[in-house]
Amino acid sequence: MRAETGCCKVDAVVTVDSKGQIVLPKDVREKAKMKPGDKLALVACECDGETCCIVMVRAEKLGDSVSKMLGPMLKGILKQGDGPNERGEN
Image 1 (cartoon, one colour):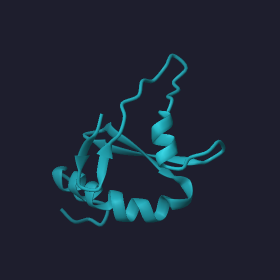
Image 2 (cartoon, helix red, strand yellow):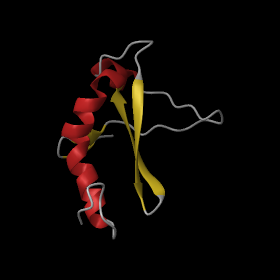
Image 3 (cartoon, rainbow, N blue to C red):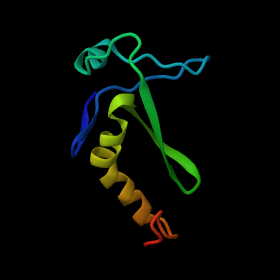
Image 4 (cartoon, one colour):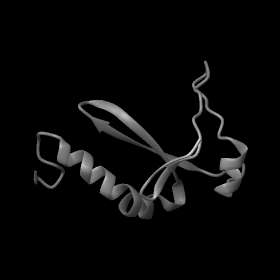
């Protein structure tokens, strides 16, 4: 399964098991050059008080990834809200 939106794409759909765990498919791990022990940060986005999406980012790339890749998406979410964003702007 692959759906693209700008720089981001859906490479797989995973299922949460009864223990709350997921398995990242082998082809996704290989493509991302992930190995055992790698750290991932989970970035949750909220809309109307509910988590609408969760993004995994390599922990060592967190600062760069959030600002470059997720920044435009987060700005779009903030613009949809009724209240001011973090800087007090609408």
